[in-house]
Length: 546
Image 1: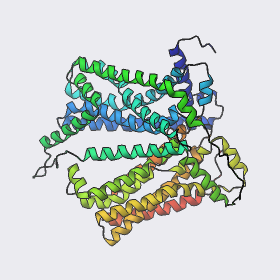
Image 2: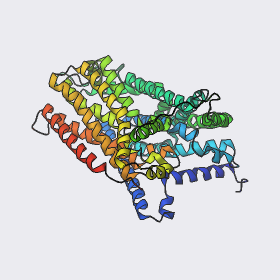
Image 3: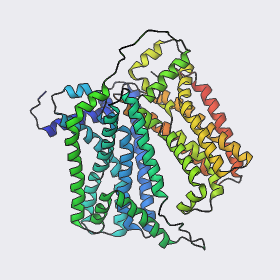
Image 4: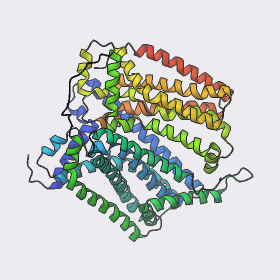
């Protein structure tokens, strides 16, 4: 290998190789099996469909703001949504991307400088996050330009801003990951501590977001006659925009540049973003090898004694192996279990703050009956985002041959995966149902629905996860991020249940059918339960995917 090339060229070589591994593009070039090519194509088409849905939502949101006369808030909102999405998703994979990745020893053995490796890892995340920025900011910028008719300088500044927008949030997420890894590396069980700290950070951010959204907001934007109060609405959005700009100063600089044409403010936004990145790479390179060595080291007891062996059933052994596989991986745990965390935090917030106060702060003081009807579906929707059953088979990786060589019936394997998912989702469902029941004070029949409906939907989505995992699983992945974040399994397992449950909640609360919400909820719960039983009976005998 020629190492005399420019560092930028060496960085790009690492980035290119990593992108090829993550996207699986080499499948179309070298793979001979047409089934694998079709599956990869199906994954790409699904990603394109999700992108189209996101673009459509951003266009609709922007048109709504423009119609209300709030078009000047669109640029700041676009940058804010892009930054928050980047921060939220990057935090979940920063540890596996920068620290403790599987091929760390191989990469570091190459004749590249540490700064080149750090640069390549960061640029890889930056490219993926810039894709998010394009999907959000490009359509929103187009709507703003259509309604505001800005000067020609807006267009180059907006396009450049799209490629700069993700620098700061990506770096902040990486700093959080570096901090968590540095702290956890001092403990004996570094990976377990990293998982605990990651969840603590997620909880703090979610609670902070809830607190931000419920403070200093006007009491409502519907006037006494039932009409939309544009003055109150404008005041509410402006206050939220000011609060966000106060917490994230680059937002104000960006808005002053693209909306008001202040070139100095925009130039400062660019310089701060780029300077933040350069400083991060330089500082991280100084301690990179030491942190990674600490986090990838294994500690052994020096007083180990052979005592007694315990025998368990096959299903118990696989259950224990699978649940420890998830809990010991920071990437898998934080990505797969975030739905349960969000559900408990949301139910807890309503319990402690009170539903009336929450609805009042949102400007909807008179919709408590609708909230009661929607509550079971809201619980189930958030919890369904945790679907470990959809990816458990793929997480076996190259060890799948060992599972297939053992005298284990497929049903035993699938049941163990279901039990792992139930371990997280069923207690979460019961806790959330209890908190909302104490808060919303339902009748006896409503109380039954509060507990029964989320349980049935959670069990059904778990069974669907088994079906998804056994059809889309692949085992030649290089890192867990490809399975838990970038695969067809994770998207269908986490978002599929969310869409189905959301549609069910809409049917119950919208009045599209001439039945009471209670009757509709019972009917849908019964139908979903029967469908889950039929699907389980069929899938439990299906052979393990090759």
